[in-house]
Image (tube, rainbow, N blue to C red):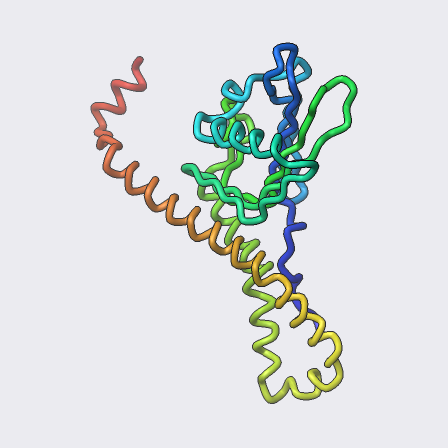
Length: 227
């Protein structure tokens, strides 16, 4: 019996930020790593880059607040319920861990366990990795179908009469799948909530774009092309 893969955070949409103290004792960004499926994009700042020059203002403030919480934590900062939303991007699940590096004093890694949308929207850098929003939404839809919906429909199909023999032959495997789904309830809930917030944000962005974009006439087009 072939079943779709169960949902897991190992689908790879994660964001990791490494920061350390500079000579003045302020935190600076050493690296940013964005993982999406099999793609890994890394930004490395050898001399360190100020948080406010690396991230958009809302996320920069969020990073500073997290660093203050890390300072109060003994070793590991674990906030699985953490959420951050900004137009075009949503993050959830946060873990902060010290990084042993002689060249980077007091280094810490902040890992956001999952994201939905375009993570480069958080960066104040060139948009060389930006993906069209429609492409992002299509990819998200496919992943949700594979990771959440497909396993559920697989299990529902077992109630059909012609599947009786399959159920009898694979009782152990079916029970194991049910146990995995039950164990991942909270993670699935977080991911679907993140997706819903992201889709709602896309609708708001589209509505704002429709109301703010001027109607382009042929005369306007000719004028622009002639500049």
